[in-house]
Image 1 (cartoon, rainbow, N blue to C red):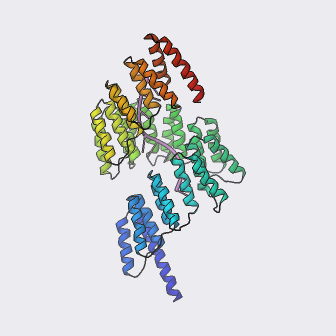
Image 2 (image 1 turned 90 degrees about the vertical axis):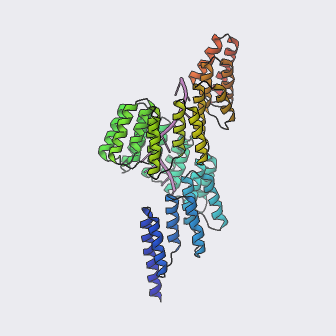
Image 3 (image 1 turned 180 degrees about the vertical axis):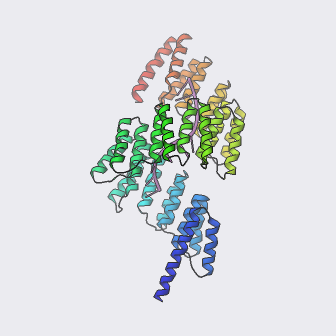
Length: 462
DNA sequence: CTAGGGTTAG
């Protein structure tokens, strides 16, 4: 009897290995048919089998599909465990459905399943993604001081979240403190810090980190390289960047599209479309499978080149490749249409984007506002501006510049002030345009007053 | 579970 039980367990284990190998390569139907065969042979799937399925369905089909497995396992008399929920929570978080992650977390607790460190790590990550570092910090403290043992991912998530929320200095200090207490950083930890430090321009410290990677016995990986590559372009060191890219190519670090897209994106930004196109051709020649971010880069390239038809062709390619457009794709198209002066097309695409389940985002609206201004429809642009729930310095700079362009300096001045009152910065060039406009159109007193307000705002907003 | 690439103003 005992022998039989052992055999049974072994067989389920084998079944799970088999299911896992199919799930890994997106052969879900195959996995399902194996399960059916197994059941026919009297071999019942267990919680691990279902968890493997949840993971795969979340990854390849969607969270709803993953979630439906929960019901299926319930019907089969198997209760979901913390791993089941961790998969779902992480999947929602990956898909930027943060509120869903939080709901799933609550659901798990309500069902009496105790979260583990992984659950808390993901929860922390969710709060950081929501821009709520205080909440994330609370979770971090709970992990450290509570019943759970933090793991490297806990620290990595915390350090990364701090960097992403504008607290890179704190992240760095935490890192050093943890090190003094015996934390051995992973390569990922270093990559997180190198990226954070590069972004705030602390290149000296970033270089020190890279040196520490070697001293710790790690070898920098493609991510380290791409981070440094991006940093080169950010510092406008294009020659150096392109050299690094070719070094990456010869060292085998360009097995995906990241480095290419970094370079292409940087070249587009400085208007070197021809060079960007050359790198696109290179990228295509490698046969690397394009993901949605790569497609977005290429679509943006065509848009900036005024080749909208080519951009539309790529939209079709995305579908043929079985990928889905995301908010970046749509925003890039909307901006491209605006830049081409096709406001109607842009508005149509905005509606289409909403139809596809994407909220209108700040960037898309900013593009629309700017596009409307450029074709002389400033009143409509103002209407859009007023309807916007969120605005940023792009919104204001664009409007202020264009109002100045048509000589409406007092209106521009009013807008500039409401921008400053909201605690946001505005381009220096936009400020100058308003000030000199007011001055030379006879509103010298107002110009003077505005100037002093700008000065005060500089103190307060800093 | 955690790290690199993709969108807007001048």
